[in-house]
Length: 253
Image (cartoon, rainbow, N blue to C red; front, side):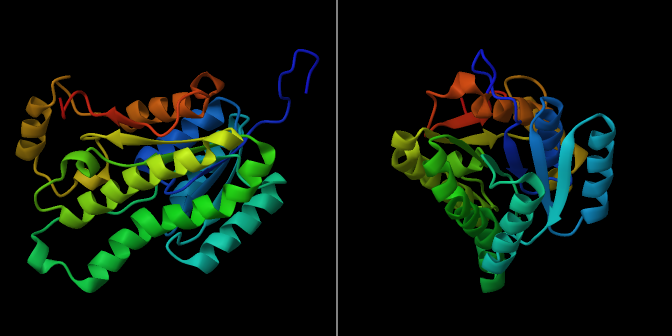
């Protein structure tokens, strides 16, 4: 600590699903703000490493960790590797990794259910459990879960995805109550229609219809979501917990 009480050592951040889209935008934003950032991905390692190299060239402290967060052994290995690289468990956890599934419910298989909930819900659970004791002991921590507006409203032909994100919201609120006395905040960001690869299943005509439905008159960007995350992990948000922050351009109004 400095004489003015400022912390010299940058906060340690783990961002899951950080090779592209929202996760990459969050990693870039927080690395640019001076945080030490661990970027997790499961398969696009080369893409993540390329981004990390770019960030390191700009002076950021970041590293890439490959792990399937739906697997308990992978999560433990991820946290061990993070701790070794950054000399401690994450102080800020961004649970961004997620997968979607489009189609009518009868076409969904048991394997589809297990995979969607495994990544979107179990992965979040495993990582939150992994950082829990450290954050409580430190009396400080930030957890931000990336949800979706469909976790609140539900989306036709995206039943499993909507249900998994609804679970994220309930988990967020309950854990926020549990951790608030320890100085740890837990919040979620619920993006609307964001220009990422998740929209690749939509035609330009469909995207234009979604843009028209959005009161803000445009589709969102990964950077829009990253800015919301940046606020929630900051000291300015120390009295904000258990919230589901919509970043949807007014879509659900």
